[in-house]
Amino acid sequence: MPPSNIGAGFAPAGVSIAGFGTPGVTDSTTIKLFIKPDRTRGNARKIDPATGDFVLDGYGLHVGCDVAQQMVLLALKTELGTAAQTDLGIDFKRDVITENTPRKAELAVQAALKSLIDRKIIELVRVEVSRVGSSGISIQVFWRDLSNGETQVIVISQ
Image (cartoon, rainbow, N blue to C red; front, side, top):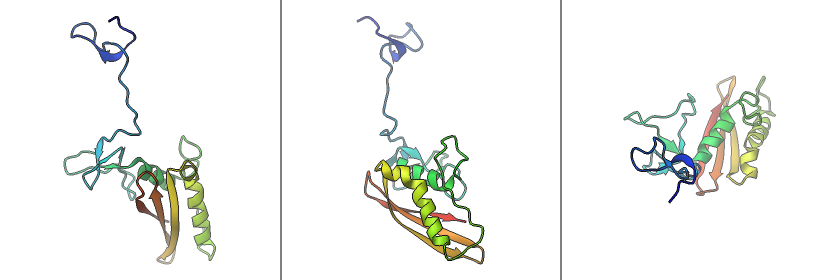
């Protein structure tokens, strides 16, 4: 059979480094490369919400999560306008905590997650805002991954 394309296909040893044939591809949104804490496989690297670093297991391997979890975390932990993707992030700055702060926080969370909600990736269940000390707030975002029905929570401290 004559070669159809040059690419990372199959070839007998010695013919070519990369080989001839149709390049092998996979859908990166469905491949499950990373082991999650519950020992199932995830398709994204888990990010520690407190540090922003990828989570590693005891062997130095990346811990997995579902891609929706990673997208929600990035949307809520990135300041709007600071990423290459201009609509990624949350626009919530608290100057003074007032009686309107919980509503402002809820609207900011809804806006940050709008593209994920519109694309039917997640559903926003509720947003809870509480005081932390005299000058801080904690925002708990409860959301549902529509691919598996799991409800999760992400905490944002301001």
